[in-house]
Amino acid sequence: MKFFSVGVLSLFAFAVTASAGVSVEPRLRQELAKTYTDATISFSAPARWTAGQPPEVISALEILSESPRGEIQFQVNGGVAAGTATFAAWKEVWISKRRVLPGERLKAEDFVPQKINIAAGMARDVRGLILGKEIDLSMMESRQTVLEGQFILSSAVQRVPDVRRGEAVRVRLVSGDVAISTPGTAEEPAYLDQQVRVMTQKSKRVLLGTLRKDGIVEVKL
View 1 (spheres, rainbow, N blue to C red):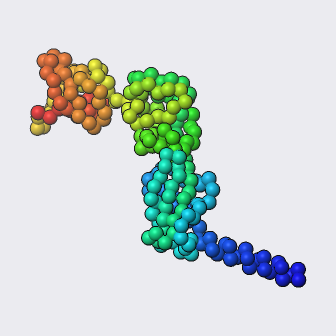
View 2 (cartoon, helix red, strand yellow; view 1 turned 90 degrees about the vertical axis):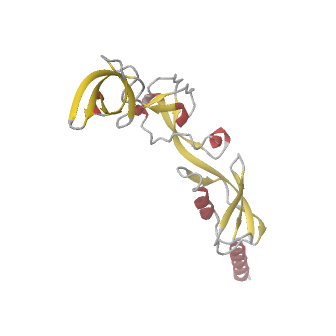
């Protein structure tokens, strides 16, 4: 009798497992990764089926809605079954250790890496603008104030210019095979291999050229 009871219980446990259908979390993770491309998706609990019979095979999955708290509603196989799940999307970002003022060059020692959930709260609203830990901060400067404890938005920083406005440059005037050089001043911040306006020191002419290495601006006449 004891052996029979254990066997019945085993068969019952198997039936419950089978009725639950295939695990849907891997497919949910795959679908969410299309939106949260640079984040790690995790679930606080197994997904809960709310309608229909959980299928043994999931041929299609669609996320119907997503709340600011990371709650999603989904359906599988064209609506044969539906359910809900709560997820988090973890992204490693730089968090400021102090207030950074506009125009200040960023330093790695002023920031600490930290994982945040970009699927909930304020981070969700600006997730497309949050800079990840892979960004080299030494090449950036602030455009606006970054508060202590705040993550960095791409709109709040910019790459440090290779030449700043007002800095001295060498203007190389090129006409065919002839080239002459004259001193000048950058009229705006500039980056290598990009166009910049410069003023020649002697004639005070404003010209448009391309910034090259060693502070040379090439102007084709």
